[in-house]
Image 1 (cartoon, rainbow, N blue to C red):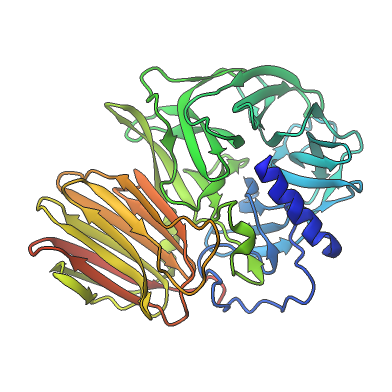
Image 2 (image 1 turned 90 degrees about the vertical axis):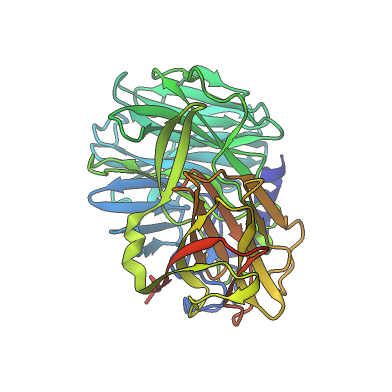
Length: 494
């Protein structure tokens, strides 16, 4: 009930301005955006004004990327964005809210709305009586969606039944819906020939991390590195704070975890602020990669973050692949290559980590940069970096070559102090052939850190003052070398 309570509170808070739970109208008296606000991300997508939550209906169609949060943006390169509509959902009855869902293109017209119709499938959150069911809205331009008058299309009279992902399963010639049975820690799998009439096929779960809740499921095929093989992967948002995934097989009705896969949870992000990710569904059949975007926040403090007038942001796009290891398949996430077009003039150098704390040779012009570092991990040492440093504040990334643990500490990142803001994250990240590679993407109020070509990823919010742009390196002992490549990144809004 926790997430429902948060969103319901948000609905009531924003009701006077007409906003939905996933809506985008801001409260009154918010100034027009300049895109130069203190915490406005410069290469992540954020809405011009108002709230942004889970990505909904990431779609590639007619040569464009389409992104919904029940507002809508479009992109031709997945680097720059054009915000199209702050309220894409129209015509719903009073007393309901649009919760998370997906968007599909009914290319064959199976639902009877015509070929190539856009269909949004989402959770209808009703307040009287309180329940969650699945509904549809229809569009012929992909920008404004109209309520289907026979909603809901799937109703189990549950208060915790939400976040459908709907896709076409070619092998069985039917639509598949995966939807969260939240407190049961299950994913319901349903099938339909026409998007209107749904038949229960199976449940997946509980499995892995079952502490509190499961929601926002996505079921996709991801390529295995170095082969022509693809494996089915079930991705879940859990405990209102993390994501886990399972690699296995799907026959159109049932998902099963693959033989030899880990019994312990496989987490997608080891930081505190990555949630509700979705992949782009390719309706042109031309995308070479599986690309995901997630929500950069945490339900414990999402409503209190100081980003204004666009409250919230999404992650940079990530390319997903699977790597076969002795312990089974593991997912890798790497930054979308198109972001390289934002690089300004770069620097490249090799040096030893200084004993004590010293400024780095690369001096960012602002907290908007990319840094790619390889570290010789063959010597016993503790080394690291202070990002967003200044005024006695910093965000610290540290690596211990003996324990092989990365620690990220945001205890003292600035004057902004949020309640329930976890401070320190850590994870074991063994080096590869004696080398640890770290890719930093720093963007005003966020850090995305990719370790060892994306086998481990850490995402964090932080809120430094405007003049906290220092970058420092440190070590306990002499002798550890690092190679640095770094770039200031240009703004996508200019």
